[in-house]
Image 1 (cartoon, one colour):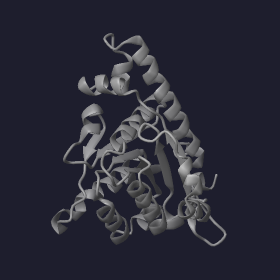
Image 2: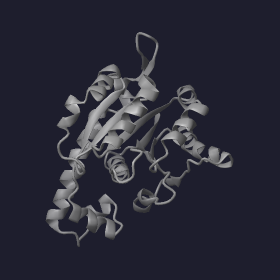
Image 3: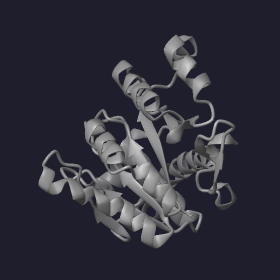
Image 4: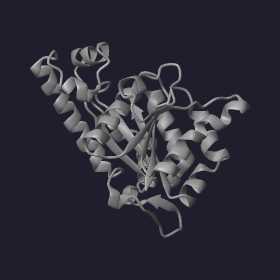
Length: 255
């Protein structure tokens, strides 16, 4: 079963593109068929690092271009692969409109396609607030994975006493998960980015220092473990189930 993975975060500079790159490399290393859609037209840097199996899409306010985002669903419907979508900043209303006006979740269910949202947060108030807004909007109809970017904020204990966040976490416990996104040492990332290397190319580079390669390996290993914990890529967790009230949720969200 295909699944659309929306890599969101709404704010710029929270780590969406880096996480999308890790997810693509995860699929490569785990032999998971994937398609990448870079929807950040102003800076399609994920596609730059992983040009194979890559497309571009756009979320536009122009009515004449509304249909261009439909490519995302068509790729999922026709391919039976994981479709990884790197969303640009400040497109919450456009993406929400695309999901609601096109009844994406209904048509996705009809064609056997799942949809989930990975929300990358830097720990700032606006970042967390946009996540709460998205979760409240879609409730149990759209699984949300809250990704704590520890490269931006190391200590996340403040959310334990954040009443609204904890209430939402409890209310939507069937569809919300939390994971951590490890720190990639800035100097190592600078080298990788300056050479426009995929993680695989950096791993096999004779020029990258051995210790830098080991730190990158640890970074990938830790993030892979977090991704696997969500079971969003586990084949036996793909089918949807119904809660007692008839609400459809993915089995991975109920695990």
